[in-house]
Image (cartoon, rainbow, N blue to C red; front, side, top):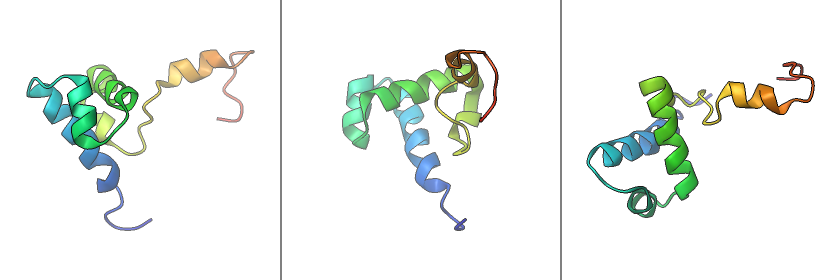
Length: 79
């Protein structure tokens, strides 16, 4: 893995959170960062769930519990 590659994920996520904390609405944040509105919404919701750990590029935006309930038998095989 390249040495500064994590900033390509952390920086936009941090900007989304900073803009949200500054009182900007989700559509405005998406337009400013040229991101999808759903992505901005997911990052903000994830921040509310796990805090600053959402900035970690290894932290998926989808909650793990939602992934497990999507499997028919509830197992985590293949994950």
